[in-house]
Length: 209
Image (cartoon, rainbow, N blue to C red; front, side):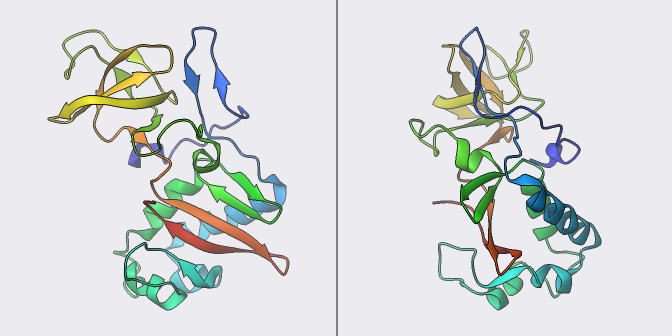
């Protein structure tokens, strides 16, 4: 996911299908100008690694773990090591999520990345995902043969992976291998924001299901 930071060249809306049958799900921004302005402020806070400023936008009951941690702002800050902001991994993880678009979950709630809300319901989120930019489909687990660019295409996993490669199947019927780590999934990190009393608040930042 680290390869995505320079992206945010979004402009395609919704789930797209090409004439060849491939399904793609690029980042989309569907949350309006008000949230876009807030996101810009938040990205500036993340760039400065300003823990105090970020926590002002974190809900007191934030959900951040399916385990025994939290919920709550103090537990969230402790879990992400925000007392040592220069070494915390939160800035990178949350920043990458915010650069992958946004989709509404309701009248006053939105999710980033957009694929969390827009991923096809008929595909198992634990065995499917979206190929990142830079992902190429190869007939075997290696670079020996010619590959095909499958950026932003929706894929499902097939049997057989390892040694840095993952076998996948595309909606158009093709199957092959992509490099491990080049697949975004709906159960990866996502941020949920709620608009309360005229301001956006981070109410969840969590991965898994």
